[in-house]
Image (cartoon, rainbow, N blue to C red; front, side):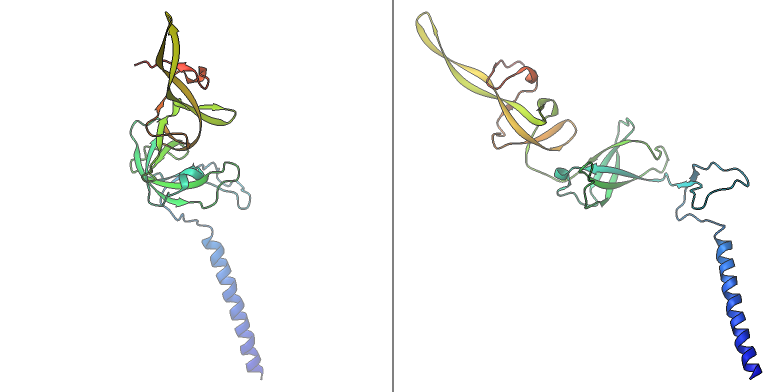
Length: 233
């Protein structure tokens, strides 16, 4: 009976010793932190034997070979956008774009901006570009039928968007006792909704618009609906 008790006691001491060993081994291994990615150390500002707070970030590992770009897409532009879409990226006044690809789309809009966050990856093998730089992104969303006008043709009044189209009107006048009819150009003001944009042009949506309409692109801020205008080359 004594041997059985001694065996049970030894087994208990053995399990306790194993548990202590495993805990000490884990604590020792935790002294060495291994990053999950290759890269360079950044934001390291420590001195030898300096005390640090628990869970305080000590530094960052930066992988500049593969950069990630975060951008916001409006509800109008998000329709039809899919992962894998080609993105042209213009970084910090770069004249030529770098090609990237869309790999993640947040299905929920940001409550403050009402835009959907998308993530785009780009290669940066020569490490020319750094994290924290700003970039302009042009995403290919596929073909869409619509009417595009220069952005400068759109005027904003009381949060609504308008453009002026060129219309024609026959105006009667009397000269030397004779009546004559003259065709005049008239500026017609149309309220529009804005759609997609390529940077210089934007889509305008209105049931009053036709593809054959000519658009006023200069002097429109001084026009009123129905004003007579003169076409200049």
